[in-house]
Length: 505
View (cartoon, rainbow, N blue to C red):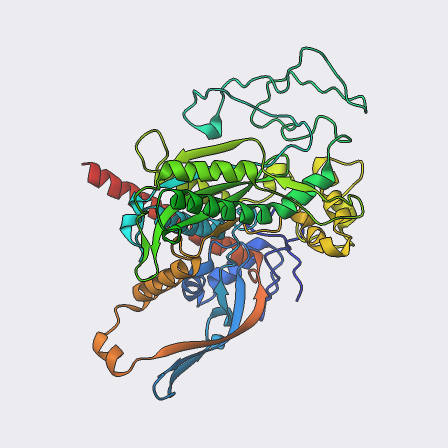
């Protein structure tokens, strides 16, 4: 049955994502409002069982419903010990959180993703969870790579922050684009702006002249940003190995690992925040401390060299037969991590990157699902806003056969890469964290495992589940589940405060 109700209680602001509830009709009663749905559900004899059953996905705005059988099998003999069907469970399905990382789509699942991202990034800086703790002494940099300019845009620059909370920054900014004269572009638009923009001003990130802005080059840069990053990491490695060779150090013992997060700026361009760690390497023992003679200064020099020297030209396109030159912007921010000399700490870096891992294009004011030929006219207009023209550029350039990927990712303003990536040997993976969380939940819900029984008759669980739908059965179920999750979060908050107060005392 197709969805007909709007999301309850949290309404998604992303067009094209669909609703998260579906009509649920009891056997002998037909509710007509959310209140009726709540009354029917709470009056049912299995209400408390239902609350416990949906607890894992209670805060999710659009959980996935799975139906099928769950078998317990002895792997040695193949003997079926027990089987359980979802038909015997409340609603006849299992509710699984959607797992979406975007905070605008599912706030609850995005918080889980953000916490996992924090652990992935911080573990690569201090160790733990199976990663050696001595990597905390390895030279590490926090680097921000920015995009070049494709036309002047409105900006907000604060030379010196005196605020304590950047989220509520009220520091006096500099004039946007002051000029001694008042020039105009060929389209008659002024190229000077003397306004001191606030943090929430709508013009921020928008071009001074929409007609002068190079939208095709902007879209192509977003599309090729991932390739530019790959080439940059290769240049960093080559530069470090060349430095090591000049100092009599075996280049094969030098290695860099990294994690990076993409952030979409207000002007619609991505820039990358990256943690780059310098390691030593031995095929027999794995990751080691970097060899003597190569340190953090050499890593900084390699990053600076790569950022300024890495460039390439794209394949030709009918509107630009010479191709587009892809390079980084002039702004490059490099800070050392955990040095105690004015750098940043591992916690600050991990928290900063994890925050942006749950964001997408919302900063530009544009958010939508996958764009198709039927919906392109809704989001792209030749004489429209900044993002509408950018979407049109992505779609137009992507009509060429070799550039189809740009049209595919037009809803992301041309950027089709992952918002969080890492080197294979940087730290643990998201899958490892999910597995550990699942094991912890099983231990705390089913009780301790008898080690003797586990040795005598070890068993495994096999799930034969199929997709049965998405979203809550009714608006009342969505209200009750989200209310239960909110109460659980409040209990956790109070418990943390009590524990903190007890420790202080």
